[in-house]
Image (cartoon, rainbow, N blue to C red; front, side, top):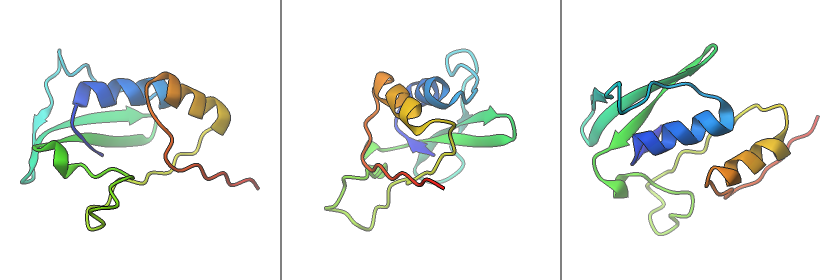
Amino acid sequence: MPCTDIARVASFYNTVLGWKSPDPASNPPLPGAMEGTDAVHMFSNGKLNGAFVKMSKPEDVATVADAAHPAKAGVLASYLVASIEETLKKVEEAGGRVHVYVLFRT
């Protein structure tokens, strides 16, 4: 998942979704493996494993609202949670904003 601040994104996802990742201050991220990246920081939650990738330039991280640059696709992730309402409340409490709200009920 591309980002500009590994400590901030790790704290956010730990608060909202319970993802665990080593403290970036005590466990430095790995060097970026691809051109345009500075660092890679792993996270996990049970069987879910992934990485936050610090981009070299903030403008390389597209946002959902970046309509002026349609070639830069932002990350559009989907998460399975027990309660969408409780999770969205956590998102906002952690400083996040909801850009697209889609609710599928079965």
